[in-house]
Each structure stands twice: as structure tokens, then as C-alpha cells.
Length: 128
Picture 1: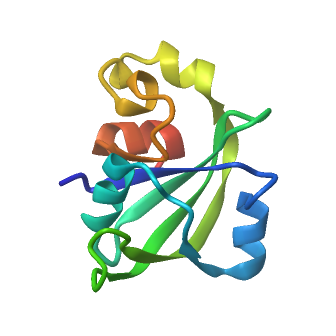
Picture 2: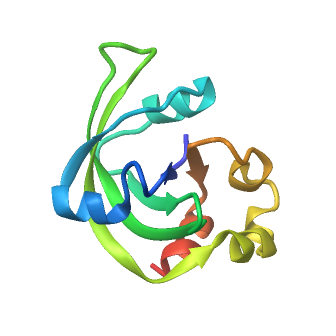
């Protein structure tokens, strides 16, 4: 199980700024079975990177898991809490150029919306 995850979002639907405004939200709209399985493996306290798709194609902020409800295993309900905006967004081009991501589903399975991260990948994206 990954210690951290990256969550992709389409900013026109729900941006990191929306999360900053809301503070806490239920992460919804995930349909891919692999992404749903990744959601279901999360635990409270897991660190997250928020990645905006569309024109931006960049990691833009952090968040953390508040709660996980597995009462419907086919659609886990994961509540997340906003963290901080990244000092500098990390573009998809920068991610693809970094050897740490050579085997990452972020690069290899571009449509996957919930991606496990290694501690090193998380550190690269967040600078933390």
C-alpha cells in the first residue's frame, strides 16, 4: 500500500481553489476500477498531492485523508482536507522528465485519476 497518493481533478469541475474554499470535501466522481481500489486502500492521515488536468497539467497543492468509509467497497467514500498550495506547480513535463516517475502509473496510465506515490515522488512534487 502506498503511503501517499496523487488525486487528479479537472479544474473546471473542481479545482484546488475549490478545495481551499471548502476546506474538506468528499472525493467523488471516480469510476475507474483501479482508481477506486486505490481510494479504498487509503487511511486517515494519508498525504495527498492534488493535480489539475486540462490546460494546467500540474501538481498544484497538498491535502490529507480525513476519513474513509468502506461500507460500499465498490465506491469508497474518502473525505479529504486541504493542505497547502505548492510554492511552484510541478508540470507534467517536469514529472515525465524525472527518473523517479519512469514506472509510475501517473506517466504510464495517463487516465488514472488516483495514483499511488512513493515517498520520494511525494517529496519531489511537494518539496517536503
